[in-house]
Length: 458
Image (cartoon, rainbow, N blue to C red):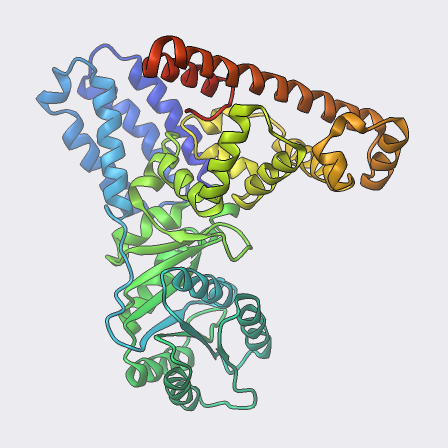
């Protein structure tokens, strides 16, 4: 996501940081490169032009020119303007009525049905009970897909096969919501390859009947500048309340995200960055800006970790690690928790400088290694996981055969695990000893030292 734009902007920032003084001339040179980077990222021409003007106006002010770190000041201005361009703050859903209604609209292939399922899952986590409504009467596959998503999520889904009147489906959905105690209706509406009168009229009639709290335009991020035209047409006809950008993981340019808010005046409310139902999150302009500028997104990473890590289990594990009682079962749990957080590449990119860190690195190889380690541990008996020292040659051969690896790979895993256990025991003893010798301050120092080796702080 935004790889090309991010790489070019970081190149501009490198030059800016090296400038001892800021003048209109070198600001103009830098902003010319920023402008080209935005246009290459498929940002709308008018949006890019206005963005550069806004940055230039603030970058040549006296406060910047006389600053101790003028280059950093210009970078901050670009960051602030980028946040403003993306929408300034997260725009939450406004669902005041019960039951509330959400219309999902957009062109065919944008990802409306999948996004409806993802949104339903997200709303469920917020304590709401959504009802998925298949309101696409032209594409039976859309109904089947929504029904499948409903079963996966264990959420009620209304599918009226054979019914061609969307308004009748909507009326039945309102009755169904009351019957099942649902507080949010999500209408997955029909799409077309292009906007036409039939599509618009149907959506307008549905809107007039349902009076939705939210009308969310689902847009494929890879659509580029065309996304702006699509958004403008839908907004004209329906007065959309916001948008959902899909397939951000597959678009290296991201021009749609940077153009949308400025052109329509309507916020991006959610972003989808993958095929899994978990790959969906509220859109935070400030976090997206820091990702684009290569500064990472630690807040989202912490939220993702908190969502996927069992805190009680984490505390128990911390105590085990301090006592040196870390077992292969614990190691397996850690591998699986990492997997739940998503692909390794997406996790590393959320760290400051993460993009540079993984440049040229084959993280897919690392993920394959994780899967092999998981397979090896799963091929062991419960007793072998607790006491790997009992693994003789015959047992090792059986485990290697069962997990599809060579015995040498299993030996390597066991050696690394043994070293890890030894290090944890040493650090646990050091924390205990220093805690006794020097009280809390020494204990904290040992804890920090342990954290440097990957151990939790005491």
